[in-house]
Length: 273
Image (cartoon, rainbow, N blue to C red):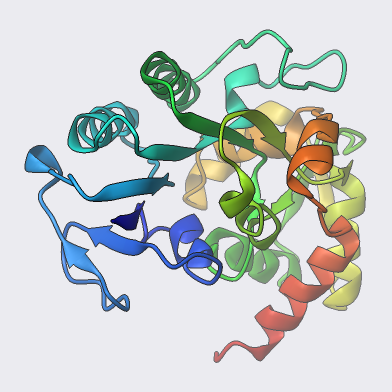
């Protein structure tokens, strides 16, 4: 009998390894402790009792569906599957705080793929689905790159910056993965406005306050910095989530976002040049 982690070499997976003892399943050698190199096209895990499925790709959404199908086919019916989905299934334009009963409205190929994976898992049963907010943490290199832009005075605020952004500490969600047995949960951080987030990081870095850019200009500039439309949309749109179910049933306790920013800036300053 064994527990496995699918997507163990990803950003969330590497964080999850600090909190669960599952066997990492990888496509190629990644130097993870106890890793097992597998071919997901011919996956067979007859001894599996629990799968932590945290694999996900923004750039190849179809792969999200393929790997989920492979996992479902590879494990026995009694195996629990804990799936890392995304709040992206609700879309970017929320009129009120979204919870587990809020209608979904995916507005990107990535979001649609996550929703399709949810449907497959719910049809199978014996699963828990965790809809995660936009994640940050030590393994998330994009955030260190953004801090570097802020420090150099090259970052910007999209629009007036009054929209709320629910950045979520990866460590906070990983702490509750073992407690999730079944059902659907929303796990997102308590938000701050985009302006508060970026200006606070600039303050901690002794950097100038970032300038404001219109949304369409920000999209054009983002391409020169290697960012996707998804990156800009996460920053620009106003989204708040009601995580009371996860707090009540899983003990989810998101770190205050300012504390999270402080931790990230500290780690950023400690990194080698």
